[in-house]
Length: 175
Image: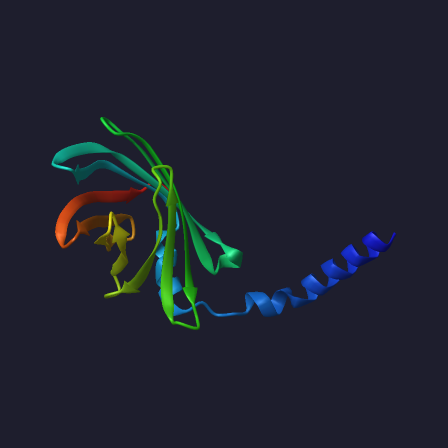
């Protein structure tokens, strides 16, 4: 009976707070990020890595999370000659540092964060810096909205100041 009363009190409290919690305004950086919501496909993605070129279809699904204050992204591809790629990403704005973060984890052993910023109304830039094999590693990504249903996406990776790999894809919104 005590558990039932505690649960009922919790639900009543949460219900009474709901109008206040949903009344929070999103920062403009997250409002802009919401343009990613939906299912996207890039049928002619091109990856250049270690002197080889790979062509494949790249998929992403973005959905709102945390009561609409963040994004959850699932990305995947079957890359001929490399295998299956599967990643999850969590995107949100930190009001204290005033920075937009994009955190990635994938099945090939990559786990890292990116700091993002909107360069213009239609161009989002993201960057990750770390150490790989004792050398400085940098990943720079750009997403340009050509229209509400088309994103031109590119990534350039450098290791010790030298280009290490690139990815280019044009995503079309499916839903």
